[in-house]
Length: 98
Image 1 (cartoon, one colour):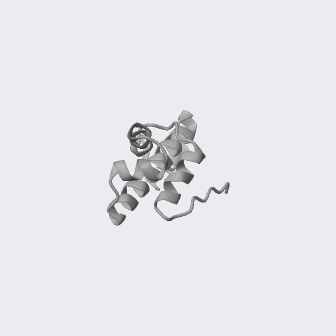
Image 2: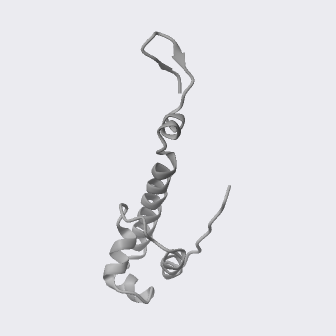
């Protein structure tokens, strides 16, 4: 991203660079990942016509736990919960360190 700074020079700094300098990049990435996961699960439920009650039952949990999983602001989700959600949707959970 090329942006003009206040002195008329062009900066090569990206938004990620800015967030990193502010110490906010990791948190922003965590929020983005959680939002994508919540969206993917909700879309998977919609595509299969699965209600929250049926999804919670398939995950062997309750609606409150499912609501926390689907809440993009709630970052406290375990891999076990994500795996159960993926399985309930007939999908697999993949985790990668790149």
